[in-house]
Length: 75
Image (tube, rainbow, N blue to C red; front, side):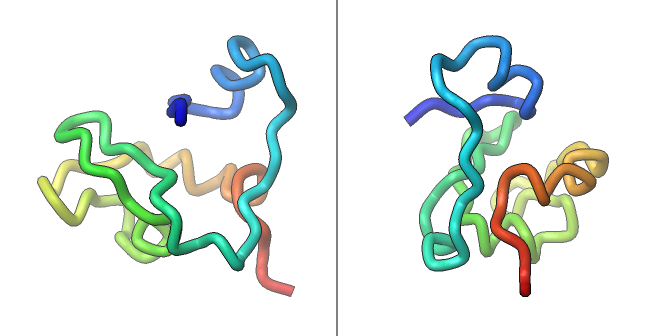
């Protein structure tokens, strides 16, 4: 129930290790737009081309480089 801007922020402030979201949970709300506070499912985030589907603000494109840390990858 807590959103972190990046894995480094998570590591610096959370009292637990990062766990990757399993593919079976990609319909769960897990991403928060920093501009409009719209919650996105992981699937929505992975398919939105780094743009919030609600307010059209751009997400940091560098975040997609760390997807392997957050989300279970395709086999």
